[in-house]
Length: 43
Image 1 (spheres, rainbow, N blue to C red):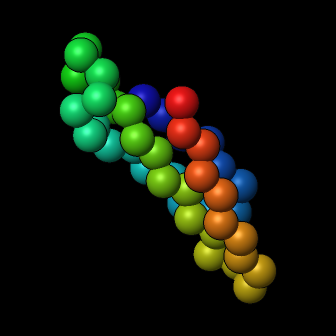
Image 2 (image 1 turned 90 degrees about the vertical axis):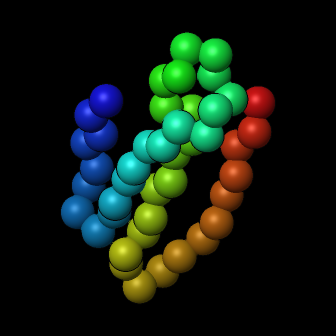
């Protein structure tokens, strides 16, 4: 899996065991800039 992000952001994916296929099913995106906010998306 590849992630393209603008400067000031970091992203990663991990496997939490939610998908039967074993594919990554969790992502974290971090804003390293001076302003920050938080959000969550659950399906």
